[in-house]
Image (tube, rainbow, N blue to C red; front, side, top):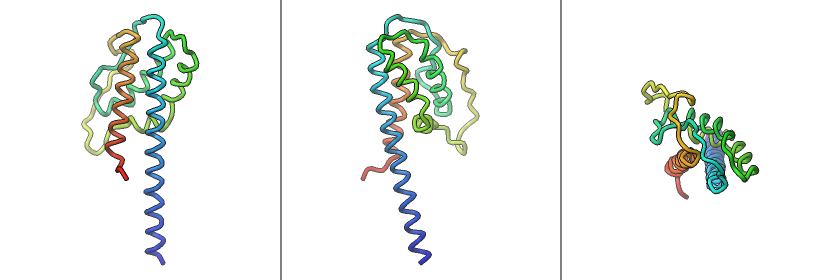
Length: 147
């Protein structure tokens, strides 16, 4: 009886993990669509502080926070997508998908603060945000077993 209950619990936990990964993947894909739409609606080229192209694993979450904070400074025509993307980037599914830092194996990493990042154009900002989200999609796809 105890063994059957334990097996049921294990199966339930596995199903729950698959659902969470699936929701995270859907949220990431939705955010990618919003980023693409936002890129089309950019109006002016502003200089913004942008995280570097090759972000270390432990700095992905702080980079997301930087992108999220600077996002509202963009001048775009599609305000709805702008607002929707801002909300999406605050989702715990996206945050957990970008938390690549494995505390057991991680070397101490000092991530630059957002304001200490180099400046880049609005379109470069969008490209790097898109790249960061794509990185999370790839990692999530690699860690999720295919049925």
